[in-house]
Image (spheres, one colour):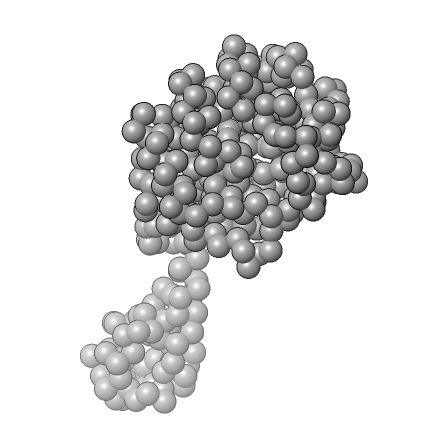
Length: 340
């Protein structure tokens, strides 16, 4: 367990929900601010952006994946937010009451963000194995939330060991780096394996699916953090459009997670609101025909019907074979006083 902006993160605490704005603002600060406002209205705990310094993080001719229409280097040169934008976003988020988070894609980017008062760093899956950079970023003294897409358990362990031995407050997010992922590739139960293998890390889920179902499933498995890509308008072009939900869906996600959390108790008992229903919904023993006083009761004379205020039907064997102590009319509840 650790804290982000005085919010406890980990088992036993409410799931920390991050709205990942990524580059869906296309470099427009006003759009980025509106995303923060909508994330707050939807009930998310944090809104997260990305700080790119393209020349620090990649070569210009880095190959691109299929979710990009142009080389990533060129895209970021055009659409990445500037440091001053992040300063304004941090201040704006503080003003409206939502936590500002950001992913630095290089150690230099992290050190540029640090003076903004950022409470934690989110690390993308692509940087998960870059231990030298992670160790540098960890030296700033902030918690690290690390996605684990396209990684093996051995690779995750190497990073985990490097960070926890330095006492870094750490979260590992289960993730599949497909845009969007095939459901057969999601393997949500990996969350349980991460919990088992990496007990000193808070375990969460970064969800690239285009809907809400796998996030709900992750919460039932104990994910303490959910990160979900968001976009103001699903028609907006961009590399993350296919894996992003709009803010109406984000509100549904937050509402659903809170309801799932409320339902995750493990105590089986009769609740107060069930007691009233038990009285009419359970079944009691009733007479199927008139029964005369002294007559021995056989199984064709009685059966079970509602309400449940008489002799419980599971005690029918205790009634069969006994004699009636008085005349019993047809189709009435039988009581123990009716029996010898």
